[in-house]
Structures are given as C-alpha cells and as structure tokens.
Image 1 (cartoon, rainbow, N blue to C red):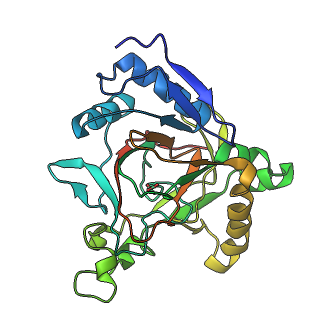
Image 2 (cartoon, rainbow, N blue to C red):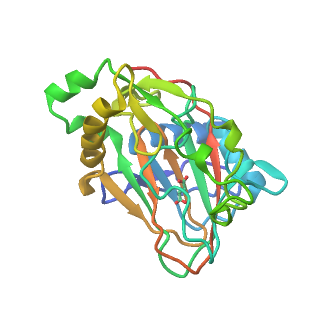
Image 3 (cartoon, rainbow, N blue to C red):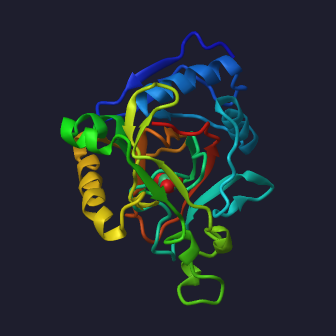
Length: 285
Ligand code: SIN
C-alpha cells in the first residue's frame, strides 16, 4: 500500500487526529507503521473512519506499530487470544473502563498503546473520551512541576481486577464473559510521575485514577489529596476530546500520553469492541 496520501487532521479538541488516506485492510507496511507511531507520539490518539478490518488485519496492524501485549484479565476473542473483547450486554449495567485510566500502567513495561475496533455499537451513546497528559503536565505551575519531577508512583490491579467477583459470587453476572483471571492481579509497578515520552521526547503526567495507588514512599492518606488534585486538573474539558464511534471506526491511543474513559450511557443495548494492547518499551523520567 502506498502511504503518500497519509494525512493527520487534528481534531478541534484537546488532542487527537483523524488519519486520512489509509486503508488498514491492506497490509500495514513497516514504513506506514513508523509514520503512525510518529503521529501517535504527536497527537496522542489517532482516529480512523470507514475501515473494514478482520481480526488478522487488526493483529497485523498491532505488530507493525510495536507488537502485541496480551491483556491477562479480559476475555479474549475466540481463536484470537491476542485480541481482548470489550463487551457490554443489554442486561449488564457496568461498562469496562468507565473511570479515567490508561491501560496497563500496572505493568513493569506498560503498553505503548491500544487499538480499539468497533464491532457492534449501540444505537446511541457509548462514546470514548480521551485526555491529553502532555497538556495537563504543561499547564501545571512551575512549582508543582518541580515537586512532581523526581517523584515516582505505584500502580496496581489489586484494588480492581483482583476484586472482580468469581463465578457463583454475588455480582458475578456483571462480569461473566468479560473479566477474569483475578488470581493474576499480583503484578505491581513503580513509574515516574512525570515521564519523558519514548517517541516524542515531551514530558507527560503519568498517574491515573484507575491504577495509580499512591506516590512511592508516601502513605495512601498523604498521596490522596495530591492525586485527587492532579486527576481533577487533567480531566478539565480543554484537555479532552470526545470520540463518537461509527461502524468502521478505529481508535489507536497512546497509553503514555493520554487517559481515556468509556461512557456508559446505553443501557439495554450491546456494545462490542475488539482491543489489542501494543507492547511498550519501558518508561523513564
Ligand atoms: C478501554 O478502556 O480500553 C475501552 C474503552 C472503550 O470501550 O471505549
């Protein structure tokens, strides 16, 4: 596939760009993969419209931009263990990823990004909101930037994936066919609070409400007020963009430079997405 018509058209919001001139059902070449990685580092999220890709092409796309990092808690797609299902059935009330988070920050080498493909959408609702952690960091005062630089934070899944009810336990039906492997929620990690982005070299705020538990060397009680401040600061509308899914939509987001949350406003309808997390290369300050 030629890449000469590739174009990044920035959204009118706080981050992200629509990628035009690309057909992802053709093989993603190494050079296109490199261009997309560069675009990801700059814009934080890349959006694609009117794509029709198979699970195999989804996996091929992920391999060209960094490789597959299999998520251990999500239900995989049948015969494609590399792909996680992000599913909500009409009778289920909870949506996966409702809270601001970034995927896999609990890992020692967090995922570079995630590629989410729309498979079945509700008649309305089910948007995903993204937030820009470059902009959130840059808008902090010099004093708070100086305080945060050099600090580290702990990330875990013990407070969420480990607590998912197992089959037969109260509330388990909400999670059946969606989340499991609770016994694997034992991997914690420590990362810089301000990272140097591996692609762009820009500084980004790297704590998130889903998985960050405390600042390293601080108690929970000491950490909470500052974490809450950072969460409220970074979620301000000017740092965000709300993506409306359509059939054929794909979002490829950077887990180091952005947060995301799934809106849960479509009760009684099914929403099914396929997600591959893309392998990262380690984080540093
Ligand atoms: C996720 O949190 O990875 C899924 C986001 C979504 O379903 O929109």
